[in-house]
Length: 50
Image (cartoon, rainbow, N blue to C red; front, top):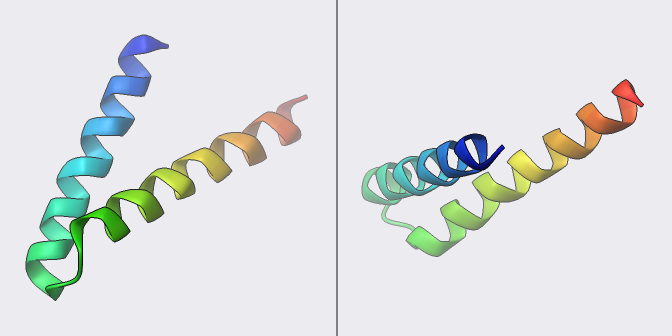
């Protein structure tokens, strides 16, 4: 689980940096939105599974 958490964090940061470079919007906005999407996906997965 630690490896998955690190992977999701790195994906969120790298994708946020890339999207910020492309769109000229703040990096923190994209990183926050991406991590919230990961969190909501995990919640939905847990509710469907359990």
